[in-house]
Image (cartoon, rainbow, N blue to C red; front, side, top):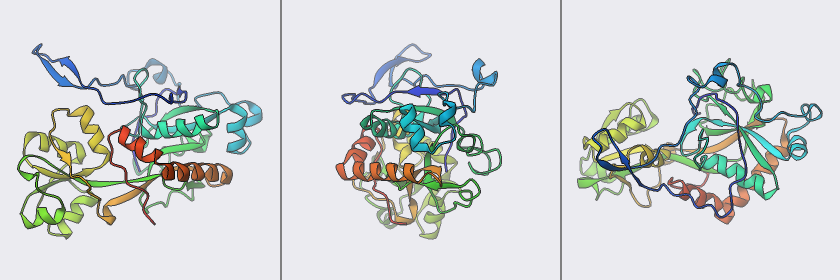
Length: 327
């Protein structure tokens, strides 16, 4: 699944229809006082230093739920409150992040805002740590501290991996997927002519991959020349240092690199599609009993996929769009 940090509950209203978000470059001054091209990092909630969080203000719904709506089905609660309660990862760019003053909030938060706005509702977000040991479904993990406690009706930021043994104990269900992510090929410099992993293998071009990941196992099994680095960000650092000129990184990391490594010169190979075994669906989690909420979200996703809204939202956040894949 995925990561975050349980934090102070915040509220988001619907995104303005005419908002145009771009990762705008600006000049920032480093220690040497010389201007360098970079990106302004958003103000991020830090639970280790936030007094409200440390005093115990956490693990509660972002908005007080009236007593008469606490024990009803989710859609009755949504209609009665005029808002959708959701849990999201605190720093899982480009999907969600805790930015108090800086828009945008993330692809999935904006996706939910778009759905809510079409129905005249607001969205309230509670931040949840999805990186708990042994996964979000482990004892004391993300689900036990969020949706199981009634903090929210939806948990965002999840990937359907097939290892879903935690769903039944928590009585959870996935929505239909709204997109898919995967490992994509990026190149720079002398490797610019590489268009596929087959090209890299034929030309003996070493490909950087995250260590102990499905991608490193794939490269090993298929005889692709590769070098391993711990996690996506270190693969990106290796590209910036010129240690490798081709890499397979998670598609969301491309957007992350635009914020954290603006000096990077690599680009995703145009038209590249991840190998089927290196691609996974993105979906949300709800309580299995909430059949009306599931039907509502499934229909919303289907309509946004057909209209192209989902693709445009991905492109807005600098992440390649891939439609859901068949199970």
